[in-house]
Image (tube, rainbow, N blue to C red; front, side, top):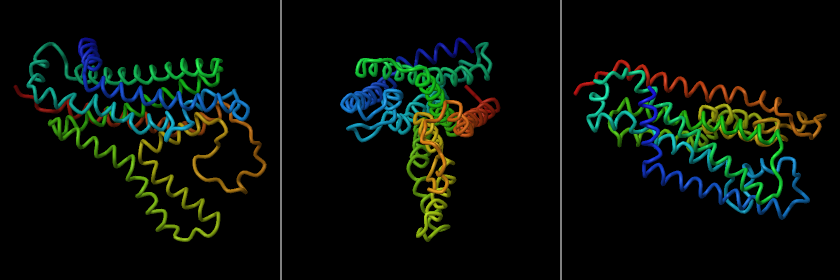
Length: 307
């Protein structure tokens, strides 16, 4: 498995399409971080310095989106790019039967490919985080505190699971269709549906179940239905996790009634309390990665491979 792992890792970092995609994501993300840092410097009196580095990830500043929102929307493209031709490309080139005719087991082959893609995602996400921290220290003039670092590290782990799901899904389509173009189109279709159309479907179902929104209770119920349906999408799970993790003042995922907020002190949550809120989301993302790759593993182990 080590031979396959290092070979795939070298191919990923030398691929032109991957380098172009990485350049676009890093450049756009750093531009959003720089604009947010400039806005924080101009409003130092109104913005507390305790969570200034978290604002570099969540605040949009003068841009249309924050860095966390940008990574949540375009991060799946990295996973799809790494996985849509991982197996189908071997079929198309006729190299799969030659590789497996060597003393390399099937499970070592697919495990090496998957872990190489996951390592590439981890290196990318960690590099973006380090660049944000370095740029933030330059712009703000002080380093992040311990709690901010922990929240950023957990954000990195959640991002790896999130993009890893799209990697596993692209590998599954690569196995099912055995054609590179078909696997890429199927992965892109699922990404667009989960990112854009699930929101429309959840809003339509909520408006049918709760047609009247004249009272605050009905508005909150409609929001709960929209959130429950929207959580079938990994994009929703990731965005809600980021909302709680990188915003210590957040306590709920959706709308909260005024009666529910009575008696609650407006103080930031500790890291452990934020983790208790997002733990179901994190375990669900990890489970999606495990299930999707497990299905790919079973299909590959039972696939018929001919020269």
